[in-house]
Image (cartoon, rainbow, N blue to C red; front, side, top):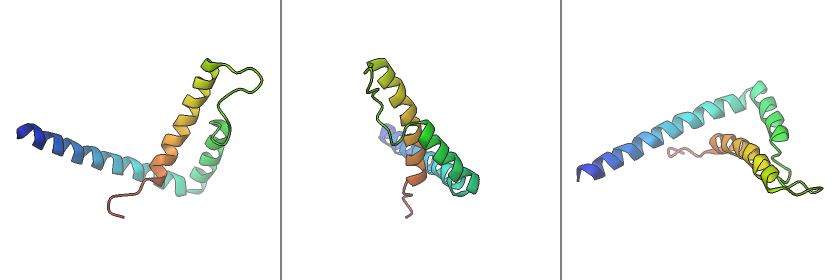
Length: 86
């Protein structure tokens, strides 16, 4: 019983922390500079590009590029996160 309460409390704390993080990203993204940063990051991180090098496919390079791309996707996910209050 106590373990369930701890687990439930941990879930609540995690959700609060995730909601707070999402608000940080959302505030950043709505500013003029934040919008410019997101455009720059999308380009730099290859958001709209394949992670596979077409000239010389290489699994290590693909993983590296996909890792960079995943950072942008993480940021975008935080910005687009729907609050449980919405």
